[in-house]
Image (tube, rainbow, N blue to C red; front, side):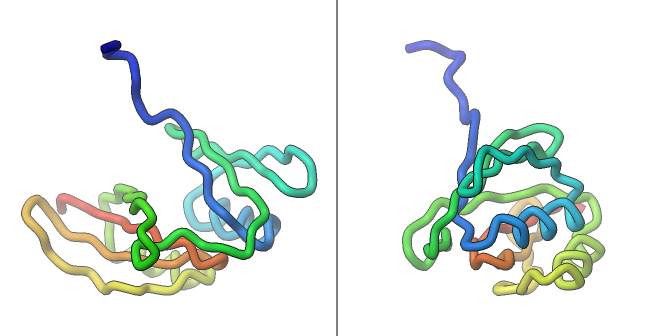
Length: 117
């Protein structure tokens, strides 16, 4: 087995690409490139991914994988997510190794943010 196999790209559904681009660029500074009217790619400074047009959303309650972002200031990150239209679905809680919260982006995709601080 090759040791160079790693997660390389992540895709999310979104019903409104302009709305999702605004949310992630304003909230986290992600950059975007459009590939036609039904797909846009993003870069968060480290990982590449994309959003495709869909009425579905990715959330743990329907068995989706949970994407977890890191922040060294959990409270400020939570505040900017809410300010920009995200919805907190699990308030900040502790777990072995740190703290985290879960949120839904405007299309309803569930992500989490954790911190070791």
